[in-house]
Image (tube, rainbow, N blue to C red):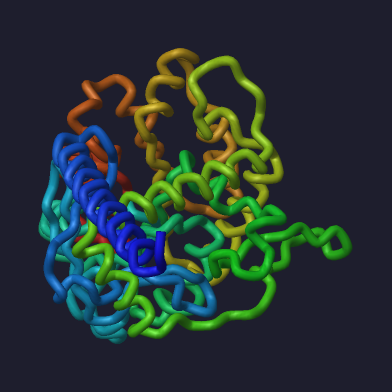
Length: 382
């Protein structure tokens, strides 16, 4: 066999390999799209639009990590919702808000539940309360594994600079304890940029620490290049989703939990170290808020409700936050105490697990019955 025949055969093999690879990629892309549309996998769908390839969430804040890019728009399409998110000039998923104000305003802190993941702006708890009370509710919530340490730092560095007379701090026990637990992998160089609280035994308090290597802000162009693949390629979305899920599960395996044979729930299965970080964040928010009213809202997910029904009693988390509320003088609204007696399936997006509009309405109705809103309805300040 001469050199020309070898080259001809090699070209034929490469052509066959290329065609087969192309067919395999098309089949993979099509299969993933079908599974995502049918809800078999919990991966959002591409928008097929360059306008949505601009970054919306990124670990771009040197103080608290994940935040929205300013004046950004993003379409979130899944098998059970199609929502467009927009941020203002401060990076809040909210309308424009001036820092100075003459009347009452409420600052809202929290993660994706506070932000309104999966629902339109007018369907969020904050918007519902704002419509009812005519009091602006400034939404500083953000998705992206945002925990209690980040909440107090965001309040100190940004939210507290806006005139307001009350704070709503939404806590999601299902994620927040694990998200705020510093582990070796989370503090190594190249890990996601976010703060953690580490116990300082000398001063009997906590130090704020960040991953090694220092903060490097990702450029908009670098994020845009990555997002192009996400908006036009379902395989890329599945890859990033499951890589992130694998990383999260790896981190979860490093987190110490209270052992239990029942349905896992961080309303019941947290430890003293984890609660200590939450309490420290609560003290920092109280310190920064001064004499403003604070409402701490604990949010259950489906597993928390099932565990609560198994236990048939209030959770240890409810008792400890209630005790902390007396020390720091804040209101504690535990939605688990009420939701477990109701038909709760309608409150959660079936393909996702975040609140539906009905879930946001349920939360708004319970907050609306608190002393703060009672005084608002009666016309008595605070």
